[in-house]
Length: 319
Image (cartoon, rainbow, N blue to C red; front, side, top):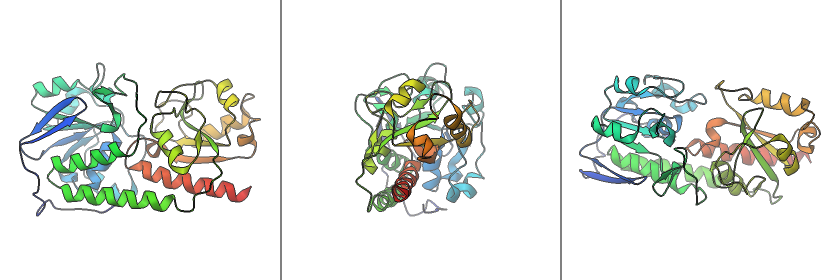
């Protein structure tokens, strides 16, 4: 993705700017100057838009930052590997706080959006986490399957908020070009796929309405858990085996929140557990690994799409 260093010459946004965001109207009198991003997904969008100089804090990382963004990210303070406290967030004196997941703005999270508003701090929640006025990760349930459109909406809206709309269009165009290239000559085998994100005891798998299902649909695969409504529902290994997928997509998370976050832990478990070791996909090592961030609804989902498409091609060639 392109690197940017200046805002000059892109003053196309007319203020005050009103943005309808997950059931709330947020009005900006000017471009924010001090933004805290509470999730890796929103962080990487802001960095891709060349806004590192406006960022005063990041948090909630599952993986290393995208390589082309590492230098810019190195200039931004990391407030916490997981969610920061409200007090830590306020200590950065932000005028804008963004999040990819609504749990940060829910009770028990960093702080509800109303509390930030009382402190005269604007907030923004990714449209990928919204179903109408409901936050999916804030306790709601998705009624409409996720697509890539809300991701592109987020990029464009953040670019408008920060008065760099042309950068937003440029980023969307680049992602869409990569998406189309990844899908060229994709096979028509229609494999059944399970996306296993985390946890050894009760595996979290991709349901039928979230980002994992987007990946499956894009490459022409069948999500074996498409009948489940939640984005990442927990299931049992007995049910997992009953679905008998052709391919298992394994999340490789750099975090160590729970056993099974890392790729090798997942592979070792599948090979040795008496319930899973005889699965055809396990015996034939029909695995594709993706970074955790590549399985989330962010710009990294395009990296995930590229990796999944290439992995499926390689598996098809070895048959």
